[in-house]
Length: 119
Image (cartoon, rainbow, N blue to C red; front, side):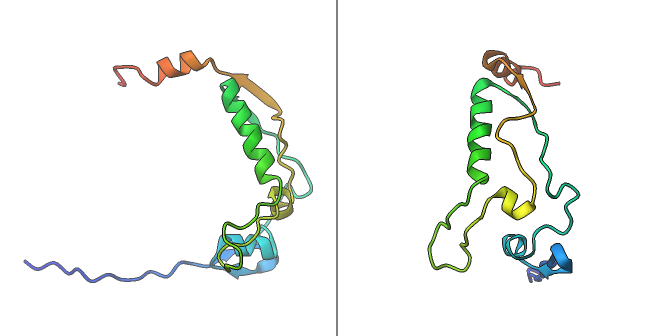
């Protein structure tokens, strides 16, 4: 019995963006044309968070970071372009403060994920 070890390349499909445009790279497509359709355009996301107090702090830090422009990791590299911020790309505000938050006790969470019998 012989095994055929030839590889075949499957080309990646182009992704669809705003104004009916297609591109292979998601970041470039979003920066140039925006999302394909945004029913929330001009709106605001309503986010609920279920986390520990530290988890909420990390959530807020993340949202604050993606809401602002993020410089490229490498200057003058076409694969590394500036990210202008979530609202600039998607046309929707992502608020730092969640609409709802349910706090989980860290000790209870730790205990729950370490149960012996997972069945």
